[in-house]
Amino acid sequence: MDPMTSTQNRLEKHIFLESVIGPVRIILIEGLPARLQPVNPSTPHLSKWILESQRQSPMLFRLLSKSLLNGDIFEGELLLQGLSPFYKMVLERVKTIPKGSVKTYSQLAEEIGHPLAVRAVGSALARNPMPLLIPCHRVIRKNGLIGHYSLGGKSMKEKLLKMEGVRIDKDKKVKFSFVVSS
Image 1 (cartoon, rainbow, N blue to C red):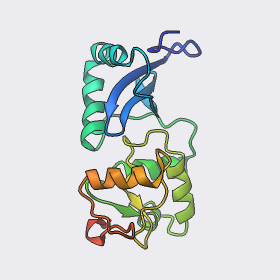
Image 2 (image 1 turned 180 degrees about the horizontal axis):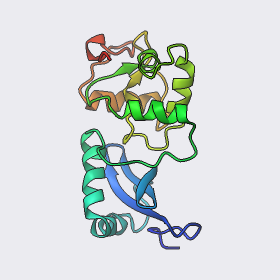
Image 3 (image 1 turned 135 degrees about the horizontal axis):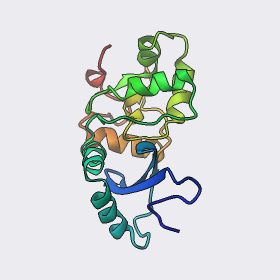
């Protein structure tokens, strides 16, 4: 099977590239990023696939790389299929959190007009199909603890936040100077 195209759906293509967590595959549906998956760095032919991805989609490859390697806000359109309107609203809001900043689950719930839906916000982030592009690692608990992370657990979330310059103390709490207000 060609790793660049799915046989299940002719409109589905794959882009392979490097990220701050290592190599990833971005699944494109009708040309739009729809899902991000980590790839084992020892996968045979991976470097060839990355070069081929860059050759086939140079503009999208650059845009994705800028976000995945530098933590910049992804400026392109994403395909959020199979998610409820509420989940989409949460994920769109999370896309606006700048590198080096965090927000709390409570802040997000208030910002989208559902202040009592803090747990539902957490559930939406747990189903994020494109971690890193939709930087759910930038959302923490209101007590400053970093909380869960679906792409590699708490240790990966801590690593990503520290790489972005967020200070975390020995008790795994974020210094509140990094929490951005609405």
